[in-house]
Figure (cartoon, one colour):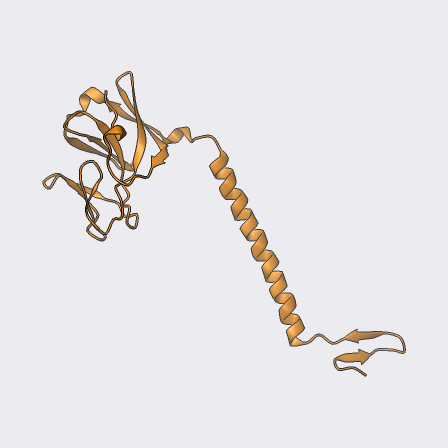
Length: 170
């Protein structure tokens, strides 16, 4: 008789399952389960990103004429700072540092954004003044409609640095 085969009766035989056989079957089962989980996550991700923009992420930041030039106004609930430069241009700057995503703070005295985690510093326009942040702060799409400042938090723009074309004027 062959190894690992037992005779039950004259014409019926079965193979005794070895530990190796059991582990092969277990790994195959785990692979199928992992594949199904990955497929579910992929479908969920694609479904979330294929939907229409979330209207709850359209943020009304007030009247343009009420925001003084050369100021930074925090909108923590909206996850951005509304920056109005000295020339009157507006930027909606993300509150997240481009290094590791920590929440930045505005230092009124130094007139710059500071990341408390690793001490990156950013100019009022979002440019990096002091690394380790690799690039300028992200900005959100900003429009001024009938004097009203509207920020679309669905449209975040990554940028290497500040350009005058990124500003919106009233």
